[in-house]
Length: 259
Image (cartoon, rainbow, N blue to C red; front, side):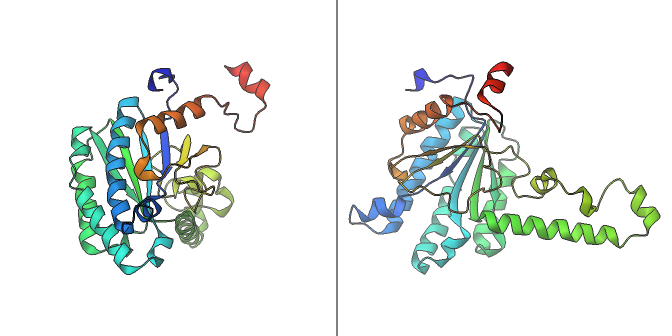
């Protein structure tokens, strides 16, 4: 399958909803945490393959804000896995930069510390950026962006009018808020929107993940549980992406005339 891919049309940014760990373990008579452990190995394999293919950003939905409602023992096991996986040398071996998006304040102190250390340690790596969505949800992200914008608008309106008109930086006028303004205040402002969103595990929903950013992303759903998701499955998703025409609201004829 990899040999049939158009290497000039590899998605720059792939986002993945890594679903099915718990069900994979349950079907094998094991605890759900066993599935999460197996899922970490899949992360290693898929990260390495994305680097090999030339993907520049890989964003992984690891733990949502809604996941805080899961049983305490499962949450504890997941946090432990986060810590252990950050010890993985895959970042340095494959020249991968590590970033996090999400409400980090809710995470245990030791996890927050390790995340920050890993981001600093890998900051100069430039083959690919792996972004982990941890304690993340799109509604949380958009709410935080709105709060920040409103705060900046409020600060701007309190300035004397003559200063207000001459200011070049800092503050936002309400009438100047655009889609770009919102994008720049999102947690993902440092990277382009996903070209391809993959969801494993057979569910056909987005689950509060990158709702603003995937407005024109290509979506790919497969029944394979995340622990079983292979490099070949990744190639199939990319092949599906390459067989689609991305029109961004234009007609087919318009897109073809621009090619």
